[in-house]
Image (cartoon, rainbow over all chains, first blue to last red; front, side, top):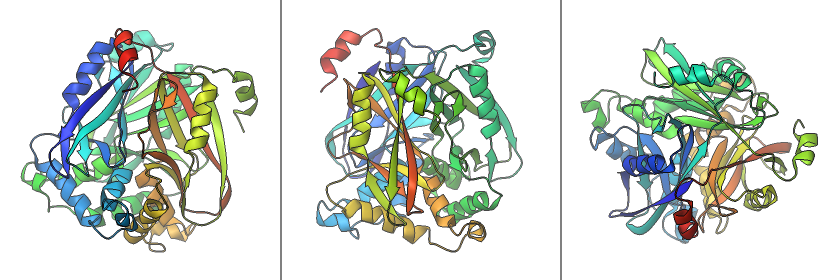
Length: 149
Length: 149
Length: 149
């Protein structure tokens, strides 16, 4: 089961919380147990699991990456001027795979799913969300008792 | 099929080898071929595949991250004082997905699964291990011959 | 369904585009919808999704990692002299998991799958490609209309 989240970004670098959209897709899938893969298409955008108490960590992420991967000093800048965005994306990575537990995303209290824009603004970003099912396994009864611990 | 590994950590930053626990879950699953996803809940803990010859690489990992992501200089420190832990976790990532080959984890000789604690000590860390099955595909006979190469 | 890509590398550090080999495996699997996991065995090699317009980004990746993770200054160098390779591998990570959309890898135009060699030359590198199937879910008809958007 698969759906695509479409989003726009307004600035060059920003982290956008897409947890609610992913959670809705999981509910629509009707699948109870398995894995949820969240994949950002585009070679200058990534997915990161991170806290969303306020804007602080998101800004820290952007500042950390800017410090270690500055703009304008890369070979690839001769093509697109966005060498730094490609490097940030390569390190953070385009996807995360999260357990699906009893019909819900297996995130802990402070884990949220963020789309990381490193070369915006863009009006056509796509994130592919795929849900696969896990077989119950031989000890399903035990798991059923313990799954919401 | 899913089980949860529970663990405690004794210091602020440490890498804990959980390969044996994950391998036991894989055996209990009874599944022979597919994928094993290992997911750390908590926004200040991650999963890394790394060598476990002795303690050297684990210490190098902690020192590398400390050097580039120092403690006490982040916006998020105003909330929890653990901005560095969130950033380390975001970069390393909360999960790894490993092939399940003929009933065994598809790790190579020097690959081990490490839980990375970046904000310990904690007494209630949880790692979710999910096993999904892969269909044999049209060339199962060929694969059967070559799977243990 | 699973196959192994075998490759050789000629230098210490290089990014090798293996997108075509992975795409061939996906076609041979006969599976239309699900996930494709690409996993590098060996604790000094990784997988990165990155642009392949020319050699620029690949060289930028190697230079970025060399700058922040220099050779010869790590505890692990006392064992193998390749502490930097282990650290680069741990940060980039050994795998990527990509959606399988209507029989094709769900990469966008500028996304390619790269094997990252950090401790070559090697003549026996192995990458495990595993394809798992996703159930169609309750809204398969909707997805069928929208899957190639």
